[in-house]
Image 1: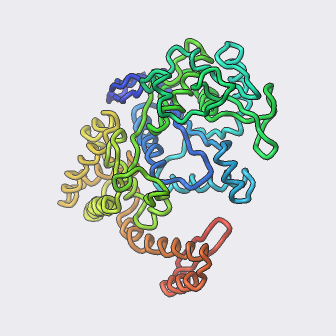
Image 2: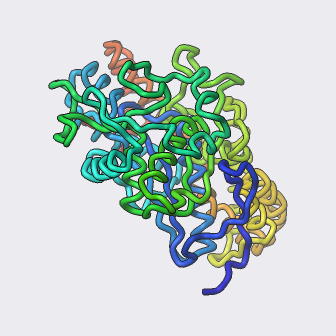
Image 3: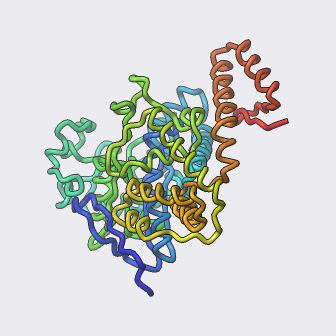
Length: 451
């Protein structure tokens, strides 16, 4: 097989240095990313990991003939159970609804779907098989209806996060339980009460711990050793550390993930996003204020390993830059066969340096505004590679104004209905009707069309 024309370097969180990426099988690169726990709407902080994975997979597909991308859905979790009880709905209804909303949200941002999207509840048998192997090899033990992984049985435990087991416990939220042999031992299987979801097992009716889910699903679809595992840096401990430990102990001689990629967090006005601070935004909330492509551009304007501070001013600036790019494409319509310049590819191949790649688009836009069709074609080709500039100039400028305003009014109407301010809700419907906008209310929400 031919060597890819560009050398891809990635910062491996395990070795804490940038390394040249060499896949296990150049004919089929394997990637696993942790997906959402589906109990609530996705916020823009969650989106950063999805976009990092999207850029990685788009780039790998440019370099290699086949990429198998797996991103899971966690649909059994105590947060899900609690939210379903709070809402007075069954768990299946909650997870179906929130999964559908998640798919809609990430699709709006141009995030391509994974090749395989396993659900945790569909792989309980795989988890129990893995747990049984860990118990048989004395890496796990039963205690009071639980099965726990023994961290002191894994010699390399803590190496991913770079700390000893004792250091990891300092300041970490760990469940204190008298049946644990070591305070850092973590749950692989736990008993379920009658009102909690549960499955029959050799250890009694119960449900899996969070960490075993991803180990079992990645093994099922990618094998005991695969190329890349990624997610937000908040998952490095305990989730990824525990995944790695149990997988290596279950399959001695394997490597589990050969490269680990972690993106930094997204702040809001300099602070970590939190509902208590009132700076917590869902994707849908943001998209009432700006086109989805502007949000995507804003997130890609910072390196995935750098902390990004989200502000409405930065979102507006991202839209202004895209306005200029689309004006360039409007001024000089591109050809269909544009080439991606080396400078753009080299930036992406240097640990997915999207801000450097985006900076190379400005000279192309300058040239396109001056009538250079080759530059316009390259501008469009570069954008398409990273999920930007997929719209037409006409569609962009229309969606950037009227459609966003319409969606914002519909969102205000939804809030008004929820708070039983029906006079305001009716007023917004009438206002939109005067603009020729017809609203259609369904169980899934409100859609609109032009009369």
